[in-house]
Image (cartoon, rainbow, N blue to C red):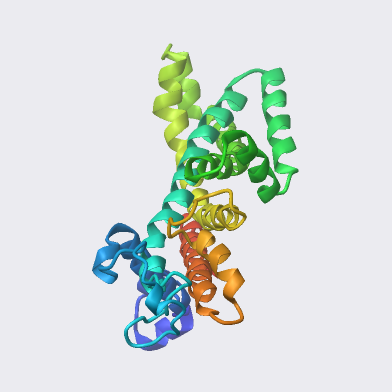
Length: 290
């Protein structure tokens, strides 16, 4: 509500500002609802699909979507809907674990750069720049070759790919906090440096980092699925979305539904996480989400 509209309606200007700030865009609301359903599928998949995602039934293989099988069946007769729902847990777990590990690594990395001398700062930040210069998927592939295939290797690879960007944010925030008045006062009072870092620097650094991590979560999910699609992440018969895309690509001509539905869920999840994350970022910066 604008100021002119508030005056005409007899609404105080301050109240009109509160109404404007509290309004949530329909796209953000739809993304939040979708994200809630995805989280429900990840935490309690049996509520949405009671069957087993690995049970085979060759007699009913490659059945088209219908009443008994909403998303059809795959080449082994497994229910695609059940596999997609149960696969939510694996895809989200890889993305969330990788993002969390990347944040943890970035906190140590960024604080070490900000609180060390000029030489240490230069070395650590040049290492971050070198990693950021590489495409994210290429860097993840290099790490998987070292860490090994599987869910753990994929998680480590995605975490290493996200850590350099996070580390630059931590360093920038830590430099600002380090020069603040309350930190200088703590130093003048003789507070030990580790206590200053834990009590003042770290808490004031985590806020922007956690908001950025929410936005980055969608990219982590898609990178983990891409590695699984290449055969480097979750291995069959694990119902992970990227692995399901790999299994379904050989049947696109006769059973398009095997790859379509996990692909749609992957795209929808990434979009929902990104929209909600950007909305949270906009709220944290005190502006309206676009």
